[in-house]
Length: 353
Image (cartoon, one colour):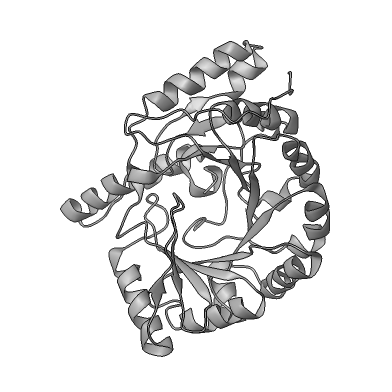
């Protein structure tokens, strides 16, 4: 595999709605050391066979091909990415691609303190930590693991080592953590991290989603305004899903209103699963297998043609379709739970979510 590259930034490929190919989420494993109710509600799962996982060399090669089509941002995900052995070496390999301007990682934080220094030294730019509660017993009930102390340790290590741009992602749910919005923002201030509240999403049948559990953007803003006073939107041009806001003291936070205000019209993201399936949308039911043509030694030109043709015919708008289905049926359930259990690719943890 030839990994040489030019510094010239290409014009990004565009889909049928004119959306550019800019951001690639790369899952390095489907395994996770937590069992969060909204993502992995069952205790036991059928894992992808290890021999089917993309090697680091294959991930780097595919990332190079994607960068030639306009991708300039890569986010490492899982499952829990820090369960993949020697992840920092992958970061170092990706960092050599001069077309990639930003390499980020989303983690649950449990193993972060152990690996943060190596990741920083390898060239990782930013870290996002999932943090849905500050309360140990609540954390244990949600994740079915007693590891919140390790998460706090991992978060604190980020700033100490020298990372900037820390984000804390919180899935906001009525009756679960809607009483913690303010404590979470205050915690974010202490660790120099920006909290992003994510509306509870319906990504399938297994997570027991219901509209009654969704804490909407409107409700979040109302609760925070009541406590802090006037909140101003942050004016910026970005395809990022988070809408950012500024508190009276200058602190910022974000809301990702993917349930009540889908952002499909500007979505420039796609997902590469740990075993090489390219998904054009979080809600996609199928994708393009890129592992097989690589291992069959198909030419670089063939692979580039596949990527171009698939993106240029992309018409996915999964969140908008889910919302339409919810309006008509009362539940935006795309995938039957029995089918979820039969096909690991349809589960959230296997999709690089």
